[in-house]
Image 1 (tube, one colour):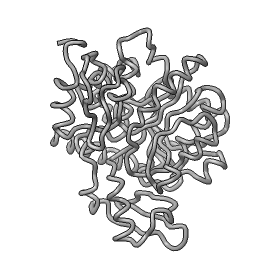
Image 2 (tube, helix red, strand yellow):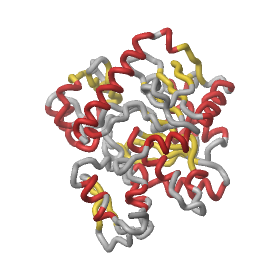
Image 3 (spheres, rainbow, N blue to C red):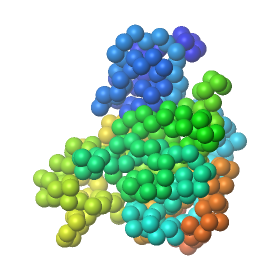
Length: 355
């Protein structure tokens, strides 16, 4: 069967949603031209007659993902057998020199610095990011940032999933089309995979491949149910979510930093029941399909940066030239590669076992 011969009920419903594989990224909903799919907490649901255009399953990161084809598209070549972390042009340590970023960033502030540089310099018309609700503490929500201040408002990690981040893809693409510039995208590995499949849609007049770049991916082991995290804060740790100013995972523990007093922590292993179902089948730890992948891996004040594409290298070098970042060889922290290898293998084995 080809595009136009299958629809949602023959593909995503039985093969992704009903099997519990759905990432709830919202790509299928956002790219349905007829608006007949709606996003529910457990995944997409068909609410009207499907006209079988093929978009929904073509952009789903959990349906027939051809990583080699995406690598050829994004990087010009597939990964080599010795590339255990995906295609890599350069791997290094980096941190921000931007004082505004350093005041609000999670670790080294590399992602916020790169995105702020992109939108402030005009290299990107906007950026699709995850922010936090102004009304509900720590509830992630999708954002479109068009200036540096809006990027800063999205800094930091939440550890729960931003539902329907893809809802902003169309708006950002339209801005890009009108201005003749691309929009940047920051997301987790599943969201990055969806963006790559969107870029590869075989509809030339839409020009999705021309609408986005760069794609910045975040290292991710798993994300947790929002309601479960809030309940844990209140009932186990005695913290009100509105009083927590930062969360961070270090050495196997999730730390909650209150506005006043000492941080409180729980072991990540204790959060197993809060892991989102769709995360359990994911095999990608370091966002292997992004232009640039960024994480911390336990480093204090620094990020691990994996540059994968020519575009990613150009963006990173532009920020270096503007004196916005400082770097170190990754060889100065030899344990980092060991941690990256261990987490990469763990996630691949877990995902392959459940899929």
